[in-house]
Length: 229
Image 1 (cartoon, rainbow, N blue to C red):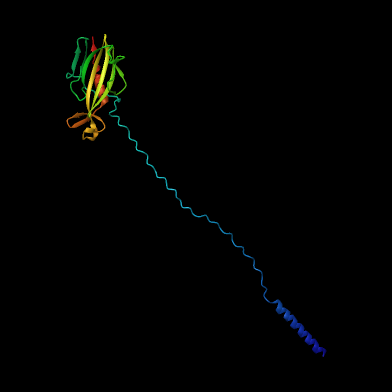
Image 2: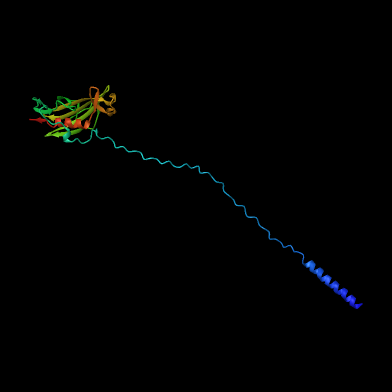
């Protein structure tokens, strides 16, 4: 009887142990680590570039001014006419002076000679008072022992311009006046575009741009032939 009881106890112990083993072998759920959400990435809105590219500005073309007809340009002696037998001589027997003048050429001027009293109201300091627009400031030229005061004027007409260059110099108790006159045309009246915006010497239907510097040099050349006894 004891033997059977012990067997029963042994079996129950084994069963109990086995039951305990079954209970310990059940899968155990392990806690999973909490996953933290990634912080939201703040994105800046794309701003469209509204700046327009700066246009490249081409440098302004610089054009050298046309000085070929400047009244102040230097005139070479080779540009002046040669004093030849075609030139005539003006002589004044009352005051014993003379000068030569050109009779041909597009720059040959008309002229007149007067003898004025030193007290003439038309004179100031030995120079002629201008009656029209002055083309330049008064200047002088000396020939021998005589110094001439030069007054240059311009008067306007219908499609024309009149140049007057007055040379005055003392002679004894008088003042000699040599007045040169030149009539010119307005170049805009001609079809030739080379004459537009200029004063010109007209020849029929054609025109030649007027070179005032050459004209001044030419009448100075005439006065340079002045002589007195």
